[in-house]
Image 1 (cartoon, one colour):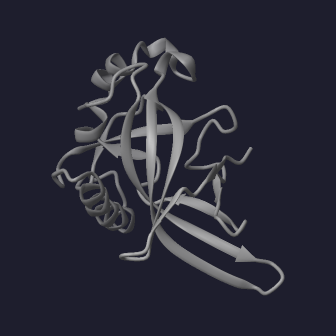
Image 2 (cartoon, one colour; image 1 turned 30 degrees about the vertical axis):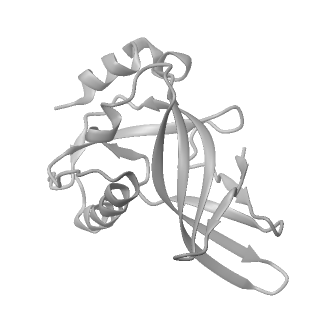
Image 3 (tube, one colour; image 1 turned 120 degrees about the vertical axis):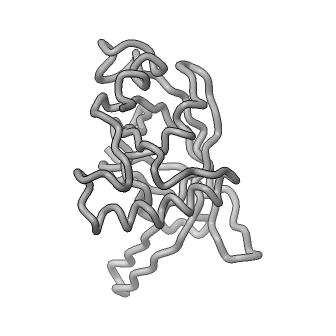
Length: 174
């Protein structure tokens, strides 16, 4: 089921949209990967590197290209996996924009290790918003920053048998 959240702010200085969303988060217990890992196809690694720079800028932090990436799912009462199940936002004009996570279902270890089971933190997630007007055939894409209020809840969702968020993180890091 799609997730709906309202766009709350439009930054007109650089025409970038920002909005808030509340998500629970859990780790998918697959081994963490690196952008320079042999297992990641080159085309995907290039896309992830571009998204990595966006995450660094959005969160005012430094993430190394060799840092590990942890597979995560964003969840809420409407959607168990926000990166795969069509979340959307509605703007002030009532237009519905599909959300596409620029970094897919991964977050850098440097960001994930700061999170703790049950404690809400804010992470700025670069996304692309896509608007499709069926009547006029207008298609528009806009870069945006989702101010994600993230609460790790490893024990509340799938893979709870791996323990708390912190315990599962230790298991997946290489």
